[in-house]
Length: 553
Image (cartoon, helix red, strand yellow):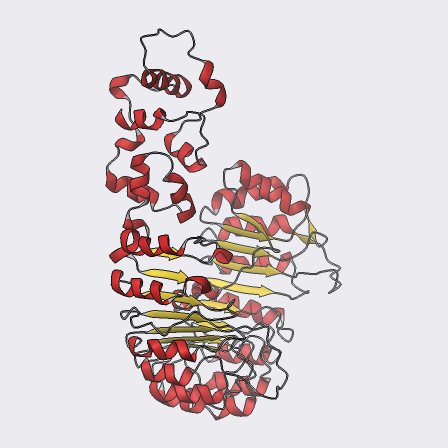
């Protein structure tokens, strides 16, 4: 009972964290201070405390009583490992044992220090430098640093005290001025992943010259730009980072993610292709200057390339047709929001190998003929995830044929934005996608697209509950004015909640039906499942083979 005594020696009315209350299973209130005024004077404070706790929780007799803190340290650490670092800091205030546990370096293998992305906020740089050696030390494997913490002293400490650091994110996105790096003579040298978030106004070449020689071990490179930049031609394009020099110093790159960098064009891709023979995944999403002229060299030199992501690029038919798709190994392909024509897609898909991942939303060139070609030639026999949202030239009959033939192997499908799709289509086809995990359907802004048909949502939920019991994420985009339900809808909500036990995200349009579903899940103690489209968006990207390597926020 030493830990219990330690727990109650301080003021019993102190405000402990919710985590501490749940772990102990006790609730201490202010009114308990006066409950023991008639106790014998011989009782000491610790006995009174034990009496209060035993009375309020109906504890078993003393000889059979079990205390949370008597669990082995290994089990306690396993429990604490589920807590975010913010909660660990609150747990450290409960007692000495919890303080020791919360400071265990094994709980600090991954450290997030960007408050805008739910990370911790560091207020004292000197204390943080001490923590690197004492709390993180050799256990640290991943850390994110905001601009104010990217200093020579911090990088020195990470290099000297954290030999197992494998992943590092340097966020310069909010920088208006860099720190002085003239004294920077050490940098983590065993990195496998380096992520650099660029600033619009800061040139990083002075900083990069100091770290080039430490980057030879990097296998995953992410350079994140700002997609808010205009596509309009500018008088002069400023490269805030020298991608060519980085490529020279990183010969072992397997994954490259250049996201939203306004100055990246085909010349940069040619440079990368000339030296990255081990490249397996290349993401160029929102690099609007890329037109595809470099893809001929890219596919010839990078024979291991399996994943090519080209969302919101300016790729052109002529450049894509010139590339040798017949000998490539690309099986994951994203051409969302591009302007490739039907003839171009027919040509390149006829030459490409079998696909496991395909994303073509907002791609007007993806027509019935293109999907029919993919089905007939067996290009989709290995497909695991497909996004067909907002493909205006794709008919329901061809999509239905695809789902009947290949639906059982799908793990994710997004087919939203088609105003002609009703509950009848899904109730007839859901039986063909029994193994689905991620499912996106519906049409947002029905008032704008003038949807006259009301959607009977109960039938869709019941079909999902019956057929898709592996479902993990579901998004239904129809707005409240389009959906139709009644007083018996709670029964169908119960069905999907009970039968789809793995469902951890159900996204709905905000409104009365959303409130009905949310209250149903909250009563079942699952308050975090139901979400609104305002704050959450479901995508199939998590089914990419290289998804974990491509995550940066």
